[in-house]
Length: 475
Ligand code: ADP
Ligand code: MG
Ligand code: ZN
Image (cartoon, rainbow, N blue to C red; front, side, top):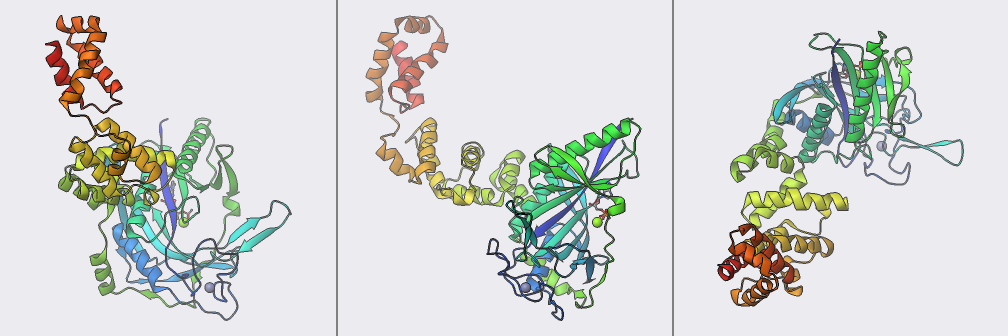
């Protein structure tokens, strides 16, 4: 029997509001434990929550950017469970009436578009953080994160492969970054994902029994966990056994998923509407004004990079898949208006350096304008394309201007026939066999001669001119 995988993702994204969702405490990350707390987020009796308007605005932006229908009225509910990082004994979330529903995100897999349905987007509060002591058998709790606003984005079970899951996640994260409403940091947990996966006979309509995977804090781990789980389930089914509905944790040390809790231990959250919060009513005017103010989103920018700059779809895809990279590209094109050349440099040289240095584009010592000026130097023939790479490396290391580096190191391309001619003659004299070969019609040795001249001039000879000179001398 052939099986296909069915995957649905639940994504939590921390919103970049200055204060928490139901109180005025700061949301800044990394403060000393329990310094950003108050009676409301600590769940003191008698304290009352007040909804942060900015959090609603951010959630609405994401809902609009993912083609969701905004619900005119939504309700906050209490999700009841006990855990030491949850001081109230319940999390304020949305259940039966979420903020937004029926959206979708289009991803591209090997050039083909796939539409992934978004079931719902709702607002909720984050929990605190437990810190387990290595030295003593005790745990500490930090409530600074308690009450930080989250949106939960639930997908339809429309995803079929681990690669599609990763593309979908990258797409969501990218939109959040374009909207500037979440910093998207998976390692620090400001963007996190639970993955639900099941198998069914290929092409079947129903859904098989799913497992829910948690604890993947990178795209790579999401992919690995899903791959592992699909294999595990396939082996069970091939053995004629049943899939047990359960929650499983990704164990990054062992590269496997392990059972955390089964269905019988599953929580009964006893949801009910929170009596302390009024229904959220969203006016059509608010939605309209937010729609008008939405920035250009990745899909639109992808299309524009192709139409405005004439870039291939692939280049446009790579560049717009990261807002900072796309901004960098546009800054560069302003200085040096040859988009394809700029794109080549960014996709090859810049991305390679970024990978090597493991830094973000924002902290690059080379500004887009400086890279633009470097490309200008190549275009004008001041330096060769090959030397430009050396100059670029030094720009990356020192942050110096390309012009200064070229001047300091005397890298200016030699486009002076008078200077190259004697060197070329010397090379011909020193290599009579190759010279004879060329004259006998083996034009391939031209590469050898030009190479020698390049070597002697440390790459500074203008290659076209070198070619012409040798042709003349050997002709
Ligand atoms: P639960 O009640 O366990 O949270 P939900 O119905 O709320 O389940 O769905 C949670 C996520 O799991 C959604 O993203 C949904 O698309 C996905 N999902 C639901 N059923 C399946 C299934 N059988 N296989 C894979 N994913 C599923
Ligand atoms: Mg659910
Ligand atoms: Zn507070």
